[in-house]
Length: 639
Image (cartoon, rainbow, N blue to C red):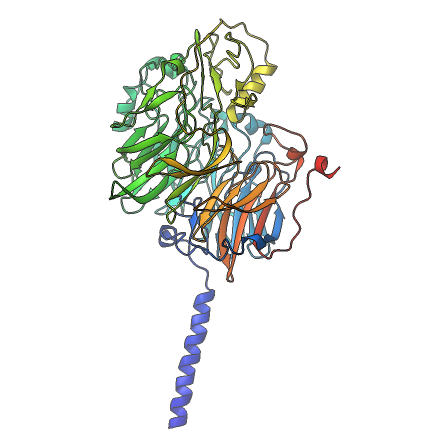
């Protein structure tokens, strides 16, 4: 009898042990709960900014100040020929890494070894689509949900791939490149719906964000950011309100307000937040927009995630004339302001100001410049509206030289927020000026960039061609500015009426100049520390509970700082030297890894050239005591 009882007990124990192992080995579901809790353990990286609040803060701390010097390359993966900058943040789920490179080519890798599991090429028509992509052939990331990987394809398709095989499950048409729309942003999955916005404000197009059923690809809702045809009724009350802020003549001149980067989500309030781009063309006088807000361009907008219903907006630059998109990363946090806990949304804007808003109401809390600013004297303390310097306004008779320029003080390069230090780490550019003057000969050209400015007017006080000057005596080109400048240089000269240069407006903000990494205190609105190296575009940051700040610099440098004091703890030259994407981290088998991708490739269509543009794009993964060889330096350096 005793033997039977003992055997039975052993059988139950063994069965429980076997069941426990089986459960542990089952793939973890990427469902609503997983996305809601993403980032809490740090083991996986399931969505673009790690969590719905887009903080890019990981609780992992195996890698810390005492051992970070041992960080070495674990493995690398050659991503393909390239064609543009690398802007994607890789995702990791169940030991598999998913990412996307130029021309929306997706791949899945074993996150332990880098071995390719599958690869999928949407076969975009390069010749037809490349001229429609404003600022380079880029993709900023993917979405994951249940058994699918969601891919925004440059040519306007949203495709769901099977996680295991990489084979298409469904395809939805978000927009058409024939209408000058493209897709470049990372989608976000919220409550079983895939949210994605469009690019193309300068062509021009009517901006929107849309939600698609994750299982079927069927459109659930769409929200336009600017009005449509004035002869037709508005789609909703939000559009009715917007129509009152536009001149009806603007329908023949362009729209804008595209949603090409930031999305964040607050599950408690079910509010989804996104930023909108500039109006097209840039100059207000060409849109008949003097003293008009032009809603909802250059704004942060909150919608009900379930329905797409408008809840509130905050417009950073009414009637924007300087290409100050508000699409930069939107970080959600709970912080104490004046001793009171507040639920906030934060943005280091392209326009040089750092904004803190109440994320439930959109009410302005505070805002100060984190870089040099001359287009505005400051922000109204009650409303947050800018107090614009008159010397920053321009048309075809008056030219203005202001800072920051259209590349912005902070652009797409991701910042990060560490709740332990209370600091936001911003890749930025400060002290860069740009010359603006309206083109008196402007005519809308469908299917082409329509910036509406005369380049280089007025380096010496008169109109002409050229590029915006920087504070360092160089030039600022990049994105649509470089593309349009190249078009202008190759086009026949068109006589332009002389534009009189106004005196440069006074500058406010921290006394910082150059491409920088800024550790910003969002409560005191002050720079805690700063380092040279960074820039508003390229690379980006990620921070961890190990009191570390990881930064990838556009020139190929991988740096690690102490998050609290900014002490440089590690610097590695990856030899990729261009087109760097942001870092991320994850944990597998008790090991913490750090990953990013970079390199532009032989088929580069970005801005620049030389050896750096010929480097084959690679994805690099680092681990403590990694021994794999780093990529070889460019041919020029190898001589």
